[in-house]
Length: 169
Image (tube, rainbow, N blue to C red; front, side, top):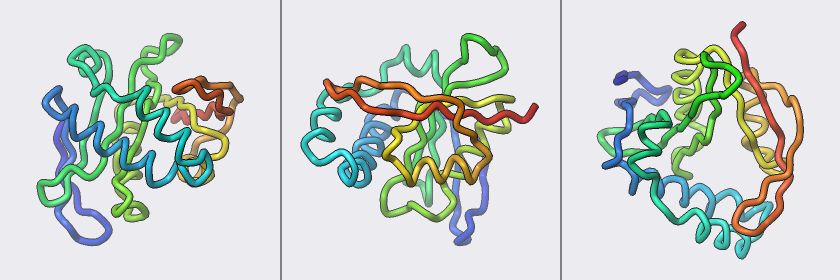
């Protein structure tokens, strides 16, 4: 999958399927987002605990089982999305994450990635931390509805999360 799209700021943007060679940049983007945004509602110490827990780069097997999309701006990776299969719906996907480098937030890049997932799958499901108001607003603005709540244990911390869903059916 490779698309070249024009972003709202008229910069050249390229979306492509990621490979295992992108594992390091995916981890770097994810970690920069956790440090920039999650510390506001979790605190710095829990964020660092979680990042230690999640320190591993995605493995070769992860890339076989999960769709990773990279968004590049002028050849530099600035965002990614990942989605895996839904056990109860072969045409659906579980969104594992959409991360945009902090300096590129609010420019439509997350929406580009999310729309690419919507174009590929008929149903999307995800979990988002309940205190992550920015992400919840983003998903609601893009047609997701809260369908439940769960506790998530990440890096030794028990966190409240919302289960959200979007469907085109």
